[in-house]
Image (cartoon, rainbow, N blue to C red; front, side):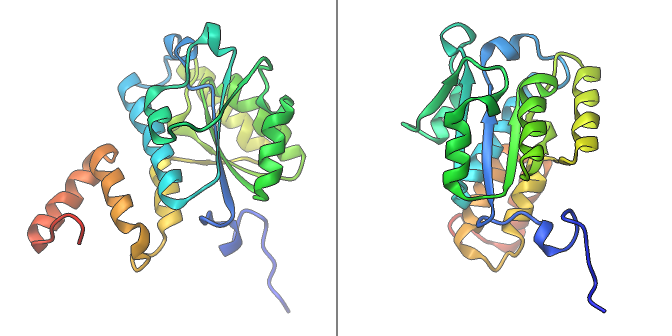
Length: 218
């Protein structure tokens, strides 16, 4: 008898560079000014680390803001990762109600959507719920998202998990996409991200290289 598994178990449930897309939502000054669920410096570090992860693994990445002429430009650290890339500036609070965003998702042909946004309870919640209803698998990066309070963020994550989303952290996304250190085409890029954004993990990796006598580029 053939074993069966849910869409959230088995190897097919894991993220790969071939099956995933990143959608970054409303990482802007207006949202950031009233974001109290996380320490601000850490949150900026995490979302930029996530953006660099997508770049290293070649994930299609969609950048979007809401009314940026009043809410501010997308976080500079993200713009620096994707210089010159179109940023979809919406009027809709729900990203999924902007047809330009949905069109780009459809054109990419990926069914696993990695999403992060400020605020979790609004800007991340609504498109996640709608995309889930349309048959996409959504992975929410909780430490690259944040809400107006700890309670707001936590209740949003609970709501999205109940709706079927999979919560992850940005370093879990990085590790799942790498999966095998024999995939040397991305190991140096991963190391660079960890050195700059990985905190203790990056420091430990630098130490390991020191002990092994391995220099940069090796």
